[in-house]
Image (cartoon, rainbow, N blue to C red; front, side):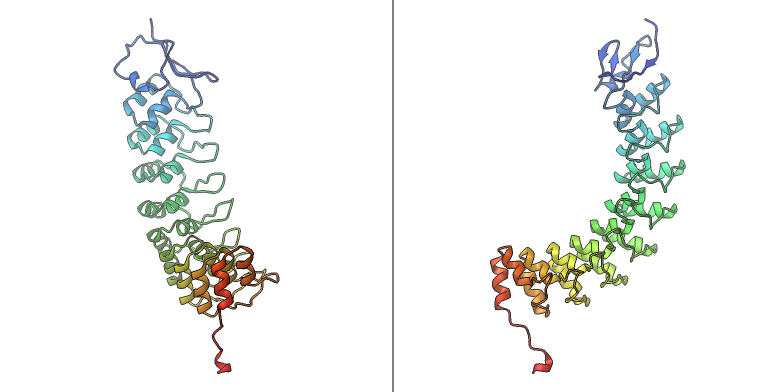
Length: 341
């Protein structure tokens, strides 16, 4: 039988070799088939044989398929190409081969991700460098505004972040969905070294997301104490408020991060600060039943009588059945003020 090249169709299942299923056996294509073999590769949900070979880093098999006219731009149902999966897997040699054969370096998945996004998310710095050297768009955004730098910072890939910054990635790019910057992402994840690097490159420490939260808010919410300390050392505004009036202290208190609450208080956070509805850090601790945190706040003279919509911290603890916190609040005797002595 004479070789008939490669035929690709959609809507069927499996990859066929002379009529036999070849779905998980793309590796058998190299060194095992005679030149007269009739190859038929059918696209299915998982993609083409080229995608499978690229995903597994089988450079010789990828070359074989390309030599036999496999469609280098064929996509899976989610828009993924062979280049995407090779970049995602960090198969640098396969990525180089695909690019040499004119793979579309700017091709996007249905979420807008390019091969650069995939390599950055997975931490494959050598592949990121290769893609950048081949003119991948470093500012490319997924549909939600996520860039390669967002991905690297969120995952804490410090050296990759450094590389992207050296190539002029936008350090203050914001996601469309929530307005978070690269610094927000690193702070949320608690990657102190990456946060430090971003600050050293003049990331906007006061940048706000759509909720009005800064990187300090996010670090406090997650209880990333070292990151909170670093941000404060770089003059983050400890009194900055989100759209509902919350400070970093409110966020840390609500999330139960006592060490972070203590740090913020030591750095002169306003213990009496109220959200727009009157909610204080003590309200949060009482509502959640964080007894030791409530004790700390009371020791620092939090106002036990402060009201949020007519309810005190005691109301909050009582309505949620936090008996130990209720008893603490009932037993508390405020420290006398200097004027009463």
